[in-house]
Image (tube, rainbow, N blue to C red; front, side, top):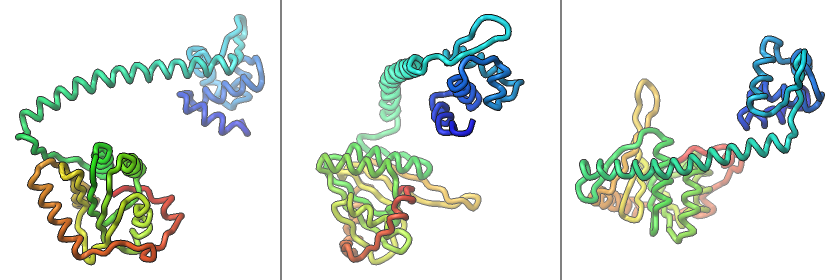
Length: 279
């Protein structure tokens, strides 16, 4: 199957196995073939060939000629892919309808849970792991309307966070950051200077990541070790006292921080393209 590797890989994106893709390409290139001939040209084991062609018949990728021995040919490619795309669109439409129903039902459950466990507008809950923290921050950024304060020693790359910031900026949201700069993170910080309104460097150590959104909600990330591995837990809250404490922490840090100038940073383009981890 030399020369068809890319096509086989792309067919697999549509839900076909490697053997099914090889058999289909063989029939397209060779015309009408028997099962043994498909096996011969495609290098699919003879013990597997009839399972493969039966699957392709079920998926309407090929047609069978009556008689003995059984012979097969590929269906017209336009018809095949039109049917595949139509089926997938129908599935997406059904998923969207189901998602709307589920969102309504789940929101009702959450509303009940909040009434049970939350007093007034004070909420505290946790998210486990780096990925969950990033997703929560992106979600918070999508809801922001005024300003976002970020205190972090990392400023590493993450597409979810970057898109969230870019969308918020189109709504007029301002982003300010405080970080501690070193050789490891300075290229990432340089990237975020293009997204943030300003970033300042604190003349000391920043022990954790803290994010404040519109003075209405906050999230902070703590790191700990378990069984020799780094673990992360994020704490998200709408508690006014906690938000106020973090704002006071920000005010204290900013007094001993200096705005970053272009001359403070050297950018490594390879590093920027390869490092997309997240705050």
